[in-house]
Length: 214
Image 1 (cartoon, helix red, strand yellow):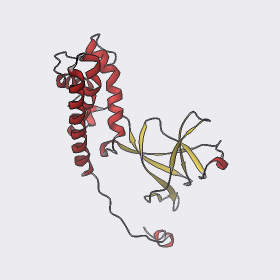
Image 2 (image 1 turned 180 degrees about the vertical axis):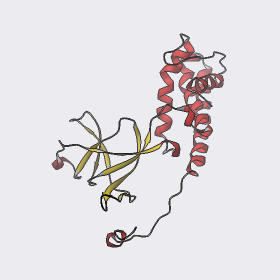
Image 3 (image 1 turned 90 degrees about the horizontal axis):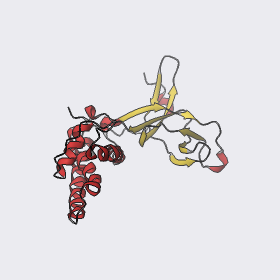
């Protein structure tokens, strides 16, 4: 089972470095650990932003913003995004048939993400009244990372480390080769990960009929 320290050492090996990082938070005192501590979170977030990874999907009921000027937007509602949200996958609506049988509609709803001066943060705009968000979470938990994700992360981190560690004319060509290797690994990882989920397209069913389902 890989750790973030293992991932950093694998990235260093891609650069031909023999340094062994032993700790990141806080760094163990070596230059290698200092650079890895700086760039590992950036590389990890970049990779999460690249794709809706199946192992990093989660859901949350959103908090509606009370101070929302509807005259400025073409949507009825605004919601605060979770702080660990990297990518929005879909917005659905939570409804209740009765107190015993709550359900979430799986029909995706329209939305936009914009910056709010009021909250000094990103907000989600939609016409949905009780929004449930499915999103890609940012989580530094290598224990849940599949091998294909780790391989891409190692190469992504190596790209960031080239500049600080390889101060030579060969650094630019090495960075170019690593970027290409990263893109190849990322493409393969997306293909493999996409096989972990399947969603059938159902024909439209009128709401009156859906209400009778049990």
